[in-house]
Image (tube, rainbow, N blue to C red; front, side):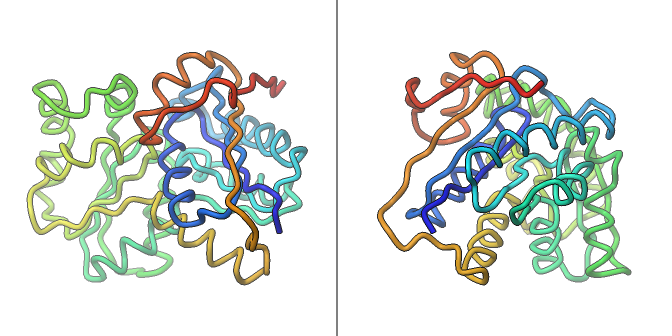
Length: 266
C-alpha cells in the first residue's frame, strides 16, 4: 500500500526515528509532524501532552496515513492509549520497543533509563520493562539539559562532557548492564554518553527498535509498499526555518525548505 506512514513529535527529536524508519523501510513515504510551537512536551502535564498528541494524530490521519508512530517518549508515556482510541490506523509508540530491546540486552539487569523529566516521572519505561521481566532492577535519571544541547549541536566538547558527567555519574554507581536512551533527542549525543558511561554497558536506541517494530507491523497487516521509494513531507506548527536548520542534526541530512508546511493544530 502506497499510503504514507505518519510520525509526530514535539519538535525535532523525532527526526531520529524518521531517520531509522527511512533506513529500515526505503520504499515507504512519510509525513512528519513536529509540534514546534508547543515544545517541549517533557515539562508539561500528562493531560496537556495527551491533548496535544490527539490533535497531532488527527492532523496526520487526515493526510491518509496507514500507520502512526508516536516518535516522542513523553507522548508515548502519557498519550498512547488516548491516541490508539482515537486513530483508525495502527499506532506504535517508542517505549515498548525500547523496553523489549533493553531486556534482550540485559536480561539480568540492572537497566538504566535516561529521559526527560516527564518520561521519568511517568515511569512508563520502568513499567514496560517490568511487564516483560518483573524482577529486573530499573534505575532512572532525568536529563533535561541534553535536549537543548542536542538542538544547539553541542554534542561534544567541554560543555557536553560536563553535563553528561553530572547526569550519568549517579547511574554509574548502580553498575547498569544497559542504558536506554529514553528521549529521541539523545541518539545524537550517543558518543558523549558512551564515553561517559564507560565500556561494557549496552546502549539501547529506541529509534532503531521502533523502526523494526513498524516493519513487522506493516508486514503482518500486508501494508508494506511494494512500489517505488517514497518521499517525506514535513509539517510544523511554528518556526519552519529553525526546523530546517536544526533538524538536519537529527535527520543526518539537509531538509528541503520546500517540503516543510506550517499547520495549525488548534
